[in-house]
Length: 73
Image 1 (spheres, rainbow, N blue to C red):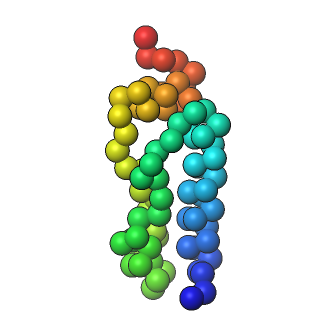
Image 2 (image 1 turned 90 degrees about the horizontal axis):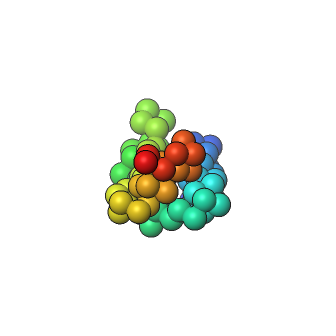
């Protein structure tokens, strides 16, 4: 099955996001391409979404520090 440019783009972004988060010690287990919007994007009308999922408080705090440099304290 050939990969569309849009599919390749969203998969690349997800891979880069995973790597960027990992460099800060952050793992979002459910991070990936949303399969429903990926399937719907075949016609080119709906862009696929990146599924960030839910995370626990510790992971959310790590995200705050990584994005702002501030632990919120």
